[in-house]
Length: 312
Image (cartoon, rainbow, N blue to C red; front, top):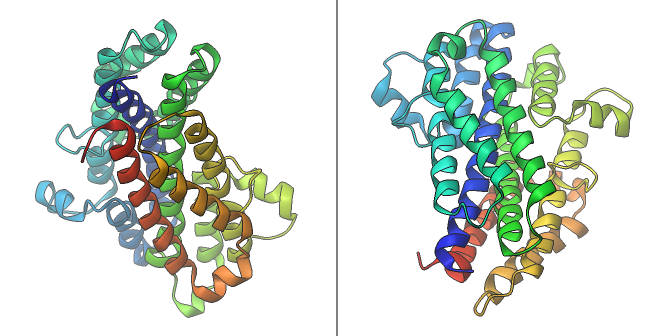
């Protein structure tokens, strides 16, 4: 497969997954702002900007930090490369470039998603129907992923699609976990209180893990158990361990001439996740641990780019 084609497939899958993740973050942020105290509202609004590195870009467009402007910025702003609008547009354009390598069902799903998004009225997205819009984005992402898995030939296009999806998902899980531990860290007197509990519940719901947590731990929500679920639990589809299991499998199936550095790093990360202990992670510091994971994911992305997708 040409590196240009692999690059398009890799990034169209990452963009769809990132759009879904952004919808999840915005949905949780909306709930935290609407049901939180005035004291915590600004903190909750800043969290998605900080985790995506878009603070300066936001304030270059908007003087005031509020929920309506935040949703508009991350949902519909054409000038924001991290907005749902921009991500789905890029995914559709990438798919158009490689239509002969993907199935007609994949193309039709992405094209229909883009057409429906372009026709959406801003009031639907930023008003009372915002949560319905976020759910629509998630459903369209689920549909694309299901159509991809169910129709595409198990070849290089499939492998690069899986690689992009799970690398993006791992990146998002790290950022969401770090947001709670570093950005939304409550005051000492609030630890274990109602606000702290609600934020942990919101974090679990943002990665569709609330019911999974209840099924596995059968008790109230404890930070150490949430971290264990999202970092080490392989049965949890959005955990780091589960993502790197899929990343490793995809990379094993890809045969590149100069990909040993990328495969070695992916294997090292997977091994650390296999043999890590949650108590040791807490002793080291969750923020420090996930910060190191984010650095590893960024380095792995660069190595994948060099090995398969063209020089960077």
